[in-house]
Length: 368
Image 1 (cartoon, helix red, strand yellow):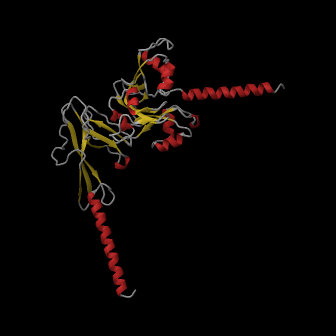
Image 2 (cartoon, helix red, strand yellow):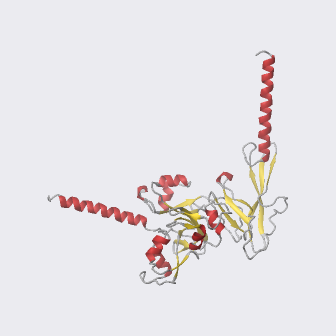
Image 3 (cartoon, helix red, strand yellow):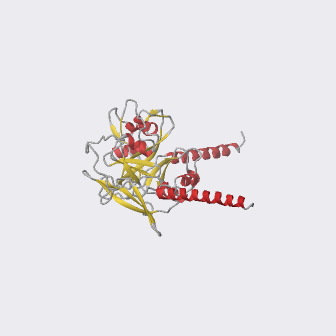
């Protein structure tokens, strides 16, 4: 073997080692920064790549999600989707959970909790059961486990999922833990979720956009629908990104976010069986000083203005559902939900057809 072979081998080993170190670092489960006060809570959202085929009920139980429709809403599945619906291996499901801040980092609050089974190791729990959303070191730190190699069946540990309640440039957002897929780029992810490449790089402390790898969890800020929910409401704030919904007010109200509806929260009676122990029937959802009920809209027009008035959800207390009248400008002929617009457009179309036919007949009569 020539003398030049050894340096070549060493150089190759160096690059392989460097690549493995970089890959390992990139695959390390994240801890999202959360600088707001410790009393601040918000809604967290993270991707879960299902390791083995299961059901929605199985995922609900694993992550300690109290009600199935909370999971359904985060994934925009119909509210009537059965609990035993199969979820295939490697399928990605969005997991909603309460988030809070502590010591500059965000983590899931209260759930999920995992009870150790025979043969479980802390690394196995982190990597295999929770799909590398959290590191075993982070589980050990949060649960104050002195020796990560000494855990016993029957012990229950909190699993700190990554999240954040921080605002972005003074605006509330949902910090979404997005799992990078093969072929993803930071630019593509930014375009898909309506943010910028620079924002994602800064939030995740990434210097070079080519550093991301499949399986990595990125903090992606999602724009949320504006709402009329009062700060003293028991469900304040409701932060919903596009294409999601939530059932709130003790199962009485369903609110959804649809970017095509001017990024305004759309709420209506949930029309599902009540499962809470607070109310046997839902309180009134009528807007005061109005004939409108929650979710109803009327349209008014004058020579100079046109507007839509909606009975909107404003939150709830232990006794009451709050509502408020929301006025929004609209324009005839452009609002697809405007009945007057549809009538006006239809009438214009028929008039146009009538005039056209009339002109043709005149042309025939004149021998044109």
